[in-house]
Image (tube, rainbow over all chains, first blue to last red; front, side, top):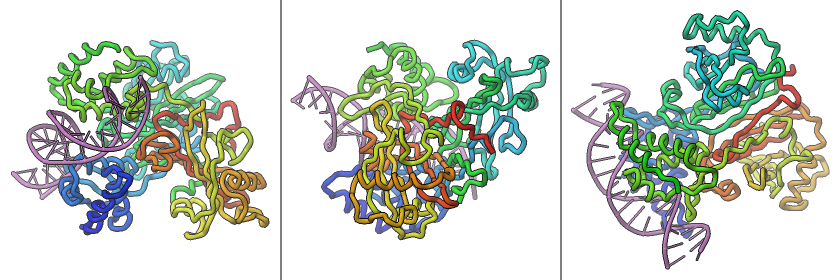
Length: 257
Length: 257
DNA sequence: TAGTGGTCTAGACCACACA
DNA sequence: GTGTGGTCTAGACCACTAA
């Protein structure tokens, strides 16, 4: 375990400055620099009680600093285990060329489930669907490097399914794959996308191996064909481990390095 | 001020459930529903001590719930003022058609400053610039509906400036506009973009009217021309008030090629 | 000056992972 | 069990805003 003796001294020193910077913010800066210079990826930090004692602050104050560093993807904390130095964020391509049409071959998405439900109002609005109208909801998970980085619900209204669609057909993942096959019949008309900050619903949190409320990036997509919205999806990406890339150079994202 | 009597009762009730949900999370749910049904945009909530007392929890616990709601853009808290119900997030277009080349006419960016600096390592990496090499750093602010929603630093290496570029030329905003004019000479070669979660540096926080450490969406862009990276920018968007949109229906299709 | 949210403390107990 | 991070309390004082 690296020595943090010098850092303790600096916390005390700056505390006397003219412009009072909150302790937790200064602590975050000091820890951040220590992570750069004295720790390597995967290394375990001293526990919170230990660190708080060393820096001469209450545990709650130390936790404010750790929370920020976790938000920025610098640390990973796990209950019952400890706090470790996180690897750099993974670049996940969400540009239309990589994420262009649901169910396309070569996608990184794994279909998990599907059921016929009444979409929540926010989803109904995306689809221009009257409230109360049912749709197929396909649940998928996106894997990268053996880890699940995102979960998604893809809403497909009945109007986007062929006339022979069997409402009483198979359930679960098989039904989901059938819905995705239906979408292949459309001539692609483009898409819309939005990114915003959110917090993980408990269902998403379970799948992403995070606590409920963890920060996530929510990617909302509308798929167009035949001059209307034929499907819409709400994807939830782990904000701590992911960087969403929109490379349009037509090749591999150079930002990945 | 709407009555929250019913809500208090529900907090007490659910506390007895079999699966112990943290109080702050349940509190968040209850408050969220109250915001939907009993409050309207701009309305002022009771203060934190008052709310904590009503729900029978410590102020710190209540604050955990409020912090989450603020993160999701539902609330706005200002020291010395109070907590108000936030308006829906503003959609800010960051698609290539709207944000296509720095300094283009009709942009929503206001040039604030410019100086010759040595870019931080992260920026040098974006530019494929050797460490220590200087670049012009143009600082800009993006306005939407009279509010500043983003700040940006655009790095332009010396190699991207014309032979006759005057290093000792004007300072401040005027210098920035001169650098932007230089960029107009290139034949545009496309761009790269990435979005990730970060926290506001104190400088950004001041410009965005937020406290340092506030959650922000960081948009990193590389501009290509002549087969190389001629400029790169790091833009910081307020995560609480902004939804980044990548709409391409009305404009050029990103699916081309 | 009064009232707000922001910071900080020094405890306590709980849920979880792992040996 | 033992040790970790997660939750929660009941205070206190500070920085800021606006009347």
